[in-house]
Length: 130
Image (cartoon, rainbow, N blue to C red):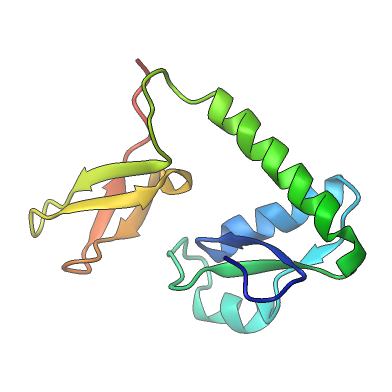
C-alpha cells in the first residue's frame, strides 16, 4: 500500500516502476519515482526486488482517481490473459541451494530473484501454459 496519497502504485523493482511511469505517460498521466536517482545508482543494471517496493507517484494529485482506474483496468486485462488454472499472482519456486519453497510475484516471472531464505539467486520461470 502506498504511503503517500499521490502514489498510485508500488513496484517490486526500479525497472517495473519506470515501466509504470512510462505507461501512465502514454495515457496522459504524469508520474514519477520519488528519489529515482538515489535508487538507480544503488541498483544500476539490476532487476532486484527492492524491500518495501518502489513507489510511483503522480505530479498532480488531481489525477489520482484516473490513474488508479487505469491501473485497475490494466490489471484486470492482464488477469484475463493468465493461463487456465492460474489461481494467484504468485509463482512458487524451490531454491536449488537451500531447498526452501519461495513465492515470488507474477511480475518477476522469467527473471532472477533472491531467495528470501539463503539469499542465493533463483531463476523464476515463466508461468506454465496449460
